Structure formats: structure tokens, C-alpha cells
Amino acid sequence: MAQGSGKKMSSCKKSGGAVKRKSNKNVNYKGPRKIYKAKGRKSIEARDDVVTAKAINKKNEAICSAKAMASGTRFYLNDVKAVGKKELSAQEKIRNKKHDHEKKLTGRLREQLRKLGREDV
Image (cartoon, rainbow, N blue to C red):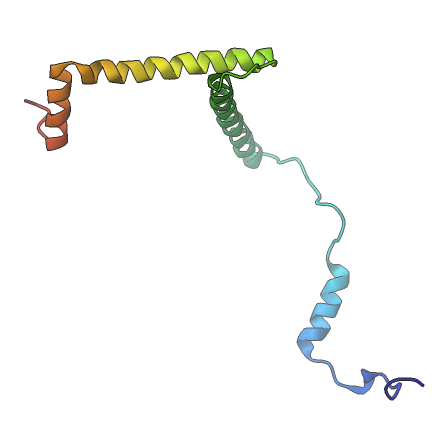
């Protein structure tokens, strides 16, 4: 036996919002995102964003490759290996520079004065 009365609810009045949503559903574009090439001022801004992103990515890649080289495992990508070694040596140089200043008495005293806010003495 059939369930229910078999009548549709078409006799019920629909709200205005439901009608708008129904009409907007057909209007909205459902395909893949359309990408247009920027023109004028927007293209200059987009170019700046790309340059900035590339610089950030390059720095992050150098840091990651340095970490990979520091782990001591065998590394096969020569271009990344070279960047990693260079970044690792730069980090070591900065670290040693900081340690050398801390070892000397004058360096330690200057550091304490700077913390007190009396660096000019």
C-alpha cells in the first residue's frame, strides 16, 4: 500500500525568501572558478604579491633544506643540498657571533646595561 495521501504540498504558499533562493539557485555559476588576467593597477599589485611570495618561499626552502642537512641523513637533491649547506653555514656564523660576544666580559656587561636601559654609558 502507498504511504501518505499522495498529494503534493504545492497548494502551500511559499515565503518570499524561499522563492528568491530558488531563483538565485539557477542564476549562480556552478562551473570552475573563472580566472581573468589582472589589468592596470591590479596587475602591478599582483606582480608585487608574486615577487613577495617567491622570496618567502625561497627563504623557507633554504631553512627547510638546512634542517634536512643538519639531521645528518643522506641527501640526494644537489641543488637543495647546496642551498641547505649555505644556509646552515650562515646560521652557524650568526650563532657563533652571538656566542663570542657573550663570552667576553665587556660584551656581558654591555648586555646587562642594555637590559637596564643605560647603554650610553
